[in-house]
Length: 112
Image 1 (tube, rainbow, N blue to C red):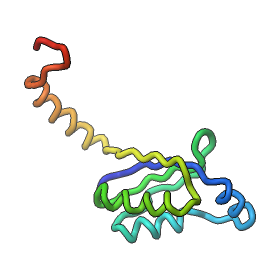
Image 2 (cartoon, rainbow, N blue to C red):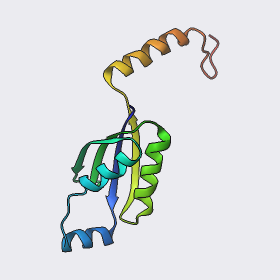
Image 3 (cartoon, one colour):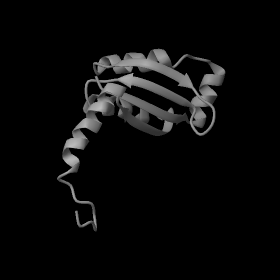
């Protein structure tokens, strides 16, 4: 299954709510992902530009987008960024496929 890494920020209201009632968000995220056929690999609270980072698997971009839209629409998170990640083996396969394609590609402004 494709792997997705998502970073985001909690809204001010979400932080206020979690200060009043601390919670582990991993459970809710895990349940949401399971409803689209995915699974939570890891959930982390982070310092710096983003407040959290999740690593998740989902069957396709459509299912992952659905889960992300639910999270974004909840008004508890903002500024989410999601990256599709590949395993080392998948990356090697991409480089091998690119190697085969490279001889037939001409770069912009290039003569060869």
